[in-house]
Length: 103
Image (cartoon, rainbow, N blue to C red; front, side, top):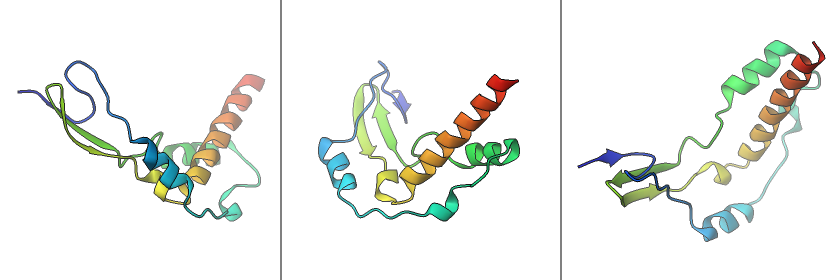
């Protein structure tokens, strides 16, 4: 018996239901502009990149062979700050990419 926490034995992956995204989009949003840095430097950009995960760390899948036993959808869309944090991380990555391109 093979138990996996991200993919099935054949490589299949579960997805959140469509209603989950619609529900998350309907939640109230607010802006926290004070989090966004006014000026970037290399150290600050690296700190933001390391501090924010690439994908939602709360999504879980439990597979037994090819059978999905349990699926927990990503909970980050429920957090009103998550989209803003991901956009700041993208800005930091863009800043570092542009910095290396200039050199």
